[in-house]
Amino acid sequence: MTTDSKFLRVFDGEVFASPPTWFMRQAGRYLPEYRKLRAQAGSFLDLCFDPDLASEVTLQPIRRFDLDAAILFADILLIPHALGQKLSFVENEGPRLEAVAALKDLDAFRKRDVLETLSPIFETVSKTRAGLGSDKALIGFAGAPWTVATYMLAGGPMKDPGVLRQKLYEEPELIDGLIDILAEKTIDYLLAQIDAGADAVQLFDTWASGLPWPVLDRVSIRPLDKIAKAVKKARPHVPVILFPKGVGEKALDYVLLQGCDGFGIDYAMDPTWARANLGERVVVQGGLDPLLTVTGGKPMEEAAETYLRLFHDVPYVFNLGHGFTPQTPPDHVAALVKFVRRNG
Ligand code: CP3
Image 1 (cartoon, rainbow, N blue to C red):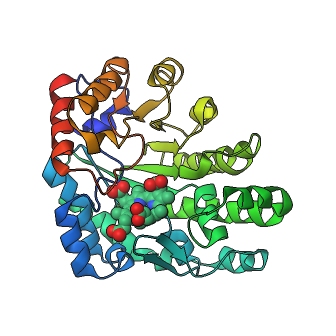
Image 2 (cartoon, rainbow, N blue to C red):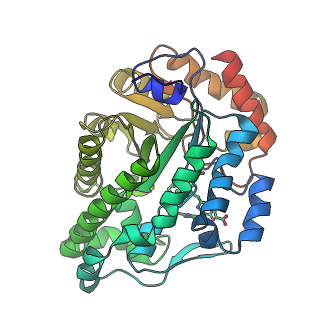
């Protein structure tokens, strides 16, 4: 299959002097046009569930920076919301889920048809795909089961990771049951995004970081293996990118998974190690510390140069090592894109 999308061609093994570029959290509060639309929409959830507004927000960074890929504007916590744990966002506090998931909830979760509640998201995908040129890819996404489970078990961001780590040992039925349900629902959700027009999918496992061995295998690697395998089996041409944050050399266990086409490296990972150990096995994506885009200038460009130099001879996607923070000046992003295009 030939395509004029640079982003997709990298997954067919093509190497570009200037690699395809997109950024995690490329749509969001650092953009004035986002803040304006967000204020009109009402709540963050209203925005996510309005296909016209959500597709507009998805396209904003593409228009401004001419990036090679758009990422669906939604959130990893829409799955718990669709499972019945009502989601809200408290200003300056982050997400809050109405209830804390317990063993007694698992049957109801399992029976729930999340695709019906999430149908506006698929409409956003189709609308966005229709608004993009054929040279641009559209990335769908979901949270990895463990990361989503941490919010479901804590009712919001976990305040004390030790509490959940204890649950891993003391309530295995709850943890493993929940992870299993989330893996199944996530497979359905990603396939529906693909059928609506997503060209690739990414799984965010932000809280893989800090998990004890061998729990990492139990709650992160194995569930992601299951999801990636199922997606590849059903839609073999769609690249699957894994982004487990903070896993260090365990990255090797992820890239060796049959269904893993791309691997997002976080800002803590040594890019020289990543080039040597991952660079020939999968498409490596990202790495740059997002806080460098707050600083801008020489420090940002020197770091970008390091990634471009190390990955110049293998398929690579330029990106960050985690998402933009609201403090990033959009001008720094424009300068970064220009730097990558000129120096690649
Ligand atoms: O541009 C994109 O990257 C696409 C959209 C996207 C959002 N969240 C929009 C969003 C994606 C891919 C996510 C992923 C996400 N959401 C993750 C995994 C990646 C990561 O950042 O670690 C996690 C853990 C979440 C959960 C979540 N959603 C949190 C913790 C928060 C609050 C963060 C904060 O700084 O307030 C959100 C809200 C959220 N999701 C915003 C955006 C643009 C800010 C909401 C607003 O406009 O007020």
